Length: 463
Image (cartoon, rainbow, N blue to C red):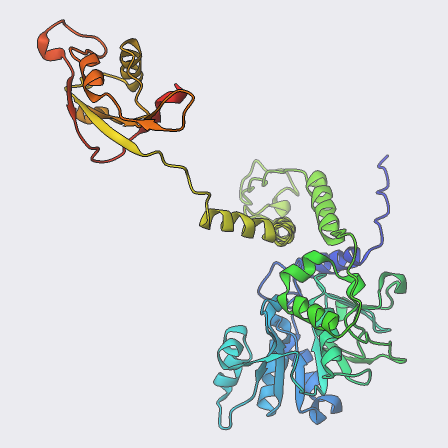
């Protein structure tokens, strides 16, 4: 008897996961095919955009804020084609000063140009940066969604960027409670209802839902956020978004008390990690079944009809994409969390601690060293003769090495005294290193000299 699976915990992410799985299983997405942790580029996005363009709210609007995700690209194109100005948020709010790119259609522009300007790289070229100090007024807001309920509750990909953008627009007076918010989604992304307890005061609701087949108007409308809710933001979030940091400093200068969230719980990271762990545990490795020849007489009756193709099933391909998407999501979230640590490491690399270099008084060049000699043989020979250089530059492959000596200090004194060069050279006369035949030409040649290059420098005091 099979055990029934435990009921899944009801969270925002559980609803996102359900939609992502359904879209992948039923092949309802266009490129990029990995929808996990994205706003899905659903099939029918162009049809939904055309249906949106027929609404009076769209026709009357002059300036429209549209998110930069792929499924809303047709909406951006139709807006530019209708000679409307569009505001597109800078992805992940990475800019320190700008919040939007302001794209204004150029008179006489071809459809190909407008299509280019509706894409990310095109908007970057033609769009003018717009900061939070702008006095622009937005007539309509178009968002992407992972899932939406008929009563207006919306779930994005879980990063909170759309909510922060709307809050900042409220702060700058670009939108109001009466500004209409629309989303375009696939019909399968629409739930009859979502648990209201999952949604907080910072979540932006939707007024109109547009799918490839229908328009759903939310009645009554839900109340929208009134501004930035600082106590819901962590210090980590502010560090990754400089524009938020600047707004916080501005509010504090104006005498407002800004309190951030005490603990950064990283709930999204925990949810994604748990989902990934459970998925990998439940996934069993199976080998692809071998193909069966339909014309083989050895096949039993009925087996011919069940001939198996050699390629992987769509389900297995979907499983591969799902695992890759989850792994990528965890990596990206942890990269954000460790971003500050990386910066500190880079700063230490750029500004390393200066190493204290001792001043070399003189150097001796040793030559006629046999090719089989090791540096440890040299150290042993020097130790036997009481010669203690401060550093050794070893060039055994060339048959030479250099001994470096620093100034000596008198005992119980900080004053330096000169090295007795003659004494050291006398101690090194008739020096042999390693195995020797006893011939005179085996002696090491000792002469004053300066190093040509440092191949290997050894601190003899540590030997």
